[in-house]
Length: 484
Image (cartoon, rainbow, N blue to C red; front, side):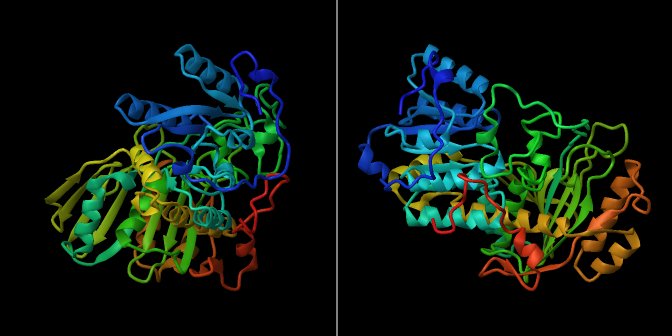
């Protein structure tokens, strides 16, 4: 395998062989304890650019880390980044195919920021190749492959960090401990909010041309190689089921993770349902822009709300609930806790008077590097298992939605009335939609079935259609192995 320089990378041929199966090697076996940890970044047209900046910032501050490889299926993005590094005297190898990068003997760890549908397979391949992994959220496109990523990390003794950076907030950790100690009484509801503006992505007539700089086979990877039936390939993949998980698995995974953190639950919910729709416009997106997910944990429910429309027609502002838009609200017997950022939490009493503030955060990339050196997954703030559980809560909510049927508002209220705060949450959703010109009596929302799950097996009881959506059919040779 040859390194791709800025002169030769366009001529570099792609590897099309079988899935990887490399002997695992620990970082300590490859380099000395005082040597640089050598990073390969995979996918950097968006969030991956933050990965590059994060490692470079740590290096400038004295951390022994160095980016030695870059991988992206978009040659325009790849060439620009390789040239930038080379112009600064940094010797980096560029790759279009992650399998080739994983063969690179100088790469100790990979940092993955591809679209969602690549996260688990890239993680598994990296673990099999003896690399440690930082993988963006959600760690999976479906429940089954997320569990396989956990199994790969354990089997090959890899350090695998999830990109839910709130887990590195000492302020939120203190708030979690404070609430669990009973300072506001029992938790009644853990609520996640993703009120984030998502305009229409437009509607096209027929398949669109794939950008010439992109290897579309590699871009699709484990997903079906479907025609591009939307205006933009990049980013708007979030809003189609074959590659994305909607805003629930985009922004919302952060808040889902924090809400589960407060509850202290370490398994999937035994009962889940969802209601919502893609409402307010007609476009090429498939995932809901307005959604409620209800996870019925025994101690207290975890309720999640997604809103992509503004507070009302013509406004640029988003709704707020209890002071938050993209936030977590922990409703307790004697007050609430608001987490409205990745590093801060505020506790209020029943009269909404401030009780206590918690603030502070450490660097999530630095935590990953520290664990790579110690070889202790317990040192990670967001181990792959935590990432899998929180990601899977998004997936099971979406499964209920995808199996749902459109119903009138009254029918929905009748069916959900037995679940704590579900009716109130739906009522506020209906008011929000009405403010945006959406009448649910005319444009009906979709109510998904109540799905019962065995948290131990991570499979649904007596619902084969739901179980089919726990995984997918993979496209050769990009197959998540049943046995990692």
